[in-house]
Length: 182
Image 1 (cartoon, rainbow, N blue to C red):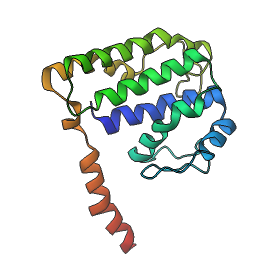
Image 2 (cartoon, rainbow, N blue to C red):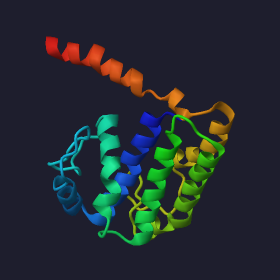
Image 3 (cartoon, one colour):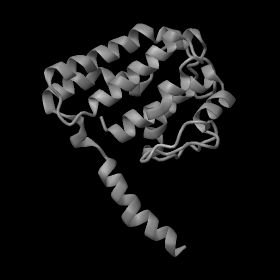
Image 4 (tube, one colour):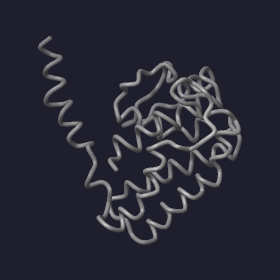
């Protein structure tokens, strides 16, 4: 799995939407807007809930960086644990060197999510394409997570498969110059 197109996109498509449903758009927007500026991370002073679907992987990563602190105290503890477990899974699986102990931590983070995911459905946060509440977990990106630890054991760190570098080059070398000529 590619970190940019799987983990960060999965966070944006699912985790963030669950948080918006539980915390509320207005409250989540407010909580992101009052965060202190941090060098190297995007500040979301305007609406997070109205970001377009085509937001960059870097923006998705920065949203994910703040999410646990942003939802703390505004959501049920079991919900926060589920979101935190997915974040732990994402960050641990991006390690440049992954030992047997790290693989075990990744596996445990995924298990912790599974132990608490029922809360997401119970709270009505999980919705399908037509905004209907889902009562199942047939989400391809979540199902893909089951194969991560065996994949790491077989081929090593997932960072070698990341599209982040080529995506950055595509923006810097193709998109930015093209926009400058229009």
